[in-house]
Length: 412
Image (cartoon, rainbow, N blue to C red):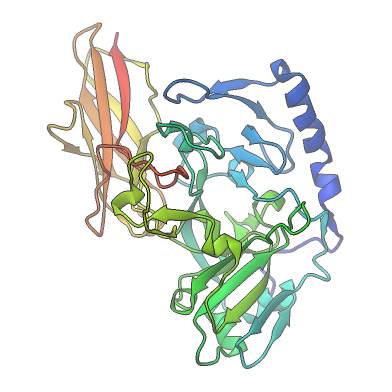
């Protein structure tokens, strides 16, 4: 039995994105017609338009229209630990997104250093490979880049270039075992239907070591949150690499190549590199730093029911809540502070849907006298003992920000 039904007709990009293109033009020519948000970047510059014009998407913050870069509005994260599909952030590298994905002819190919090359249809993949589910966070490497100081080039995201979903699909290991990986294999390279729009531009591809690819956790998803993948989030197949940044989560996955030599493609060897230092942190202008591919995520925690400048009551405790995640492992604890980090109080953790997903946290604080200002902090410690730092990192790509979050509140 096929657990998810896919339309038999071609799902055309032209039909889906036609209204989005018009919406993008409207945002450029008449931004006053769209709601605006102001992402609280240091030094300003966080004004962004919102839109509901993109297919299968609700209200989103527009970072770019071509290719689509859409950020999840922050209030979405206060509604639950699973990010709705229609407000799950979108990030593409090239504007060459296919105009159609015909599920009748679509094939996922496995080739390279294998015993048997495979070319499998969606029904074959869904019917013949054991079904698995996993809650996992997909977070852009440059999430929160807009808060970097000094500023760095790239998409100026707020904190909303992330989302948590329950992914349904099959283990990559089961697919590779079906092909029969030969001895001497060292990496597995993934490619999707996204293509460059300039001649000679490097096709977007990413690689994992053979041991990582076969660890039993990396999976290929055909559904998220109980529904077929939205077109802009990778329909019909997406690679899921739990605990690692989203650059490895190949969208519209169509090609798996088992390699017996190191992958030298641009996106693996030259792009998405970080300093080989604790927290990927260096001093602006620092030279001759060893660089390595970005990899594991780090712990983060956020407030979701209060924002900087909010008023809180002066009688009785104030309820705080938010979300946290451990990065490449689970959440051990979440703590809050009202004295600049001199002391910390444990927050209450919500249900655990799996070590790679969001955890809700709840806490109470006593309010100060009327008119007083209160800086409240939250930090996460993961199950490997890694704690969020009290100072922000910096690197020229604006990757891996995870400094302790602070909100300034006013007692009224």
